Image (cartoon, rainbow over the protein chains, first blue to last red):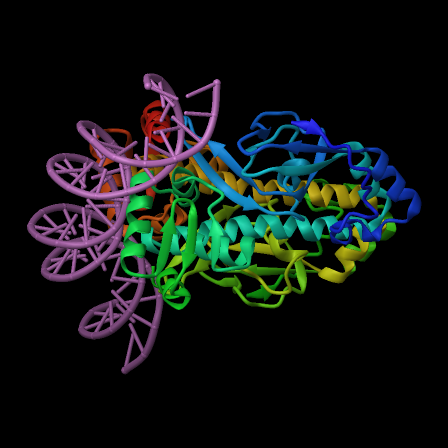
Length: 231
Length: 231
DNA sequence: CGCGGCTTTGATGTTCATCAAGTAAAGTGG
DNA sequence: CCACTTTACTTGATGAACATCAAAGCCGCG
């Protein structure tokens, strides 16, 4: 991990209006001076379960996974997040330590704002507080909703679900390079690596997708949607 | 459902300090006059997925379940909540409609506070806003944490988990009357009714618990903990 | 060029859902 | 209050879905 040398401040950040548009100039200044931007490479751990929460994290560039490790040492991915997402909001107001780990799936830029500064702003600026509540609520809802959906499906439906997620939510296209390994796909949908691969191969054989290493093309989007829905 | 005739106001509510201790007299008055208390019987639906969110819900007395229905019509329980819990906080700031349903597991008293009043207080009172964030964060964390734990285990571990939950978190004792049917236990841990029953019978045969209809006694707490942990 | 992690396929066994069928308990209406 | 209906509970048998184990090819990287 290294500190970014960008002179970008929150005001010029393309994502600023997602959160900071309720702040006045002085408040902006506070955020900006309490802010550091860090760059992480693929595979780097950004935060580890148990780390002390000292700042509010905001994903500017890249892709990360939020995950927990069970007591067999097996990882379970809670969510994959993209630029603009809050990646620390879940526990920030209720816990002193992280309840999950965060690592980078590709080169990732993370903004850190010192927590006391953020809390002060919440306490002093009501519109800002509502905005934070709104976004925080949203990210939790998404994780819960997702886990609910995954839970109902069996392998084929789960794989279809995650392929659609990557195509629609992350890459906005039908051809993309998988940012995660097959094992990580398994961790995301609570399946073994082997069954994940088997199902992908089956989709390929059935002409629903094509695969070339990590690059995947969705050939029959409609059928994938149907598989995702039917289970 | 009927409206309570209790003259209890928030000030005398035994749970008020969980949330309202940051409010001054005038603010209290606002909450109190925007507040209605409703009583529901076992089985009654309090809110249904899709209902418009008009108020903030607070569980005063009783026991409820939060659940979602999948498109096969099968219910999945997200959490069981007890007095003092916020039961509407998840979606309240990010959605206009409920993303899940709530129903009463026993006679239940719910306080409803009109949402605009609550939002105004959040916007005008920073300490209160932080308190809401804190509690909100907590309930989401709990649901996510729970789903994570359940997901790792197989049937025996899951049944053990839910028995320990009821004993430790709800009834604070080793003997209790199950507030939920076997089917609902299944819905809570993503298992079929049949396998839930089979596992309970097995625990009984092994001397870990005793069962008399809905009344359950945990005979070997330590062993139950071990089963819960080992899977 | 060789080591370790990723990927892939096959064979085998376990876990659990499903189907079936019967008993017990709890409402419900005459 | 009793017959009737429905819902909850229980056990057994069967098969499907999936985990596990094993083995081998691949790829990137030091």
